[in-house]
Length: 400
Image (tube, rainbow, N blue to C red; front, side, top):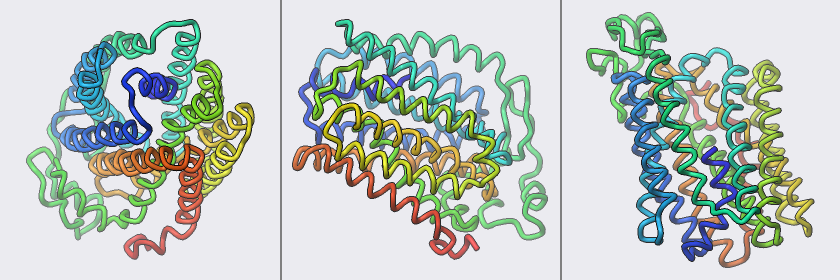
């Protein structure tokens, strides 16, 4: 719901605080940088603290900061509040993804369907905010309303959640079970010769964050990490700049922009929830290639369209195609990873850094040559993601 509201409110935030496209991009880049770094560290430490405890406190802190961001009266107040809220949201994201990927790593179709819940929330958040702004209300009410929902959710996680430790066992009571001997566990998973780095753990099997980066090379996931970051530039571009283009360059009102975004999320919901099992059967690689191709075509259509209706159709197609990136690439990574929780944290950080790389660049392009040029660059990058997935095994020798 937060990201759906952000997609629609971007134009209102820019107007309220007088940001240019480049400034808006730099703000998002700074927020996502802090979010990615903080979330990666917290998500990695969740192996030791337990996902239930980590997620509960992350939701509580996030809720408080969302209220502060929505209540900010000046740009000087909004910028630090928004960055802090994004950082807390990154911790929520990291921990949630680590827990879900650990449980569903062997069933990519189920992981795709799980991520479809995100699109349901994004659709609801976008439509409700679009209706609110169209009726003359303020976008500021959206984030405090989401905060009100986050607090009982935190209580539910604490009371009903179950932790997953690095060996894949769960504790229904929400606490940590004593982990097995890390050396023995590593040998059981990888044979007589554990991967480099698996022996450097603490008493609960926790893998330090910096050491987890070295594990990626041993697992042959460096090339996929780069592709994932590029894919998230595309997905972030669809969410941030797609609706903004409709509302500013093509003159669509908030409700029309929300409707186009909601149509894209509807396609994403159908793609993830209804087609999730099929995507699992055809394999993550082909699913990403098809999704990237759809994103490329949709963004190209939006950038070159002369009407809001046609551009909206392109946005919907692009959103549907980009919806498969996160779950399918994450499923590919966790399937090949020797330490799924640490790998998910690192990949999520790379995804956030992809947003960082793209947001200010697209903002600068938009200020110089218009948002259509920025969307065209994102479309080209989507095409590059499709090609890279076809030749992925050539990118990293360890992937053979």
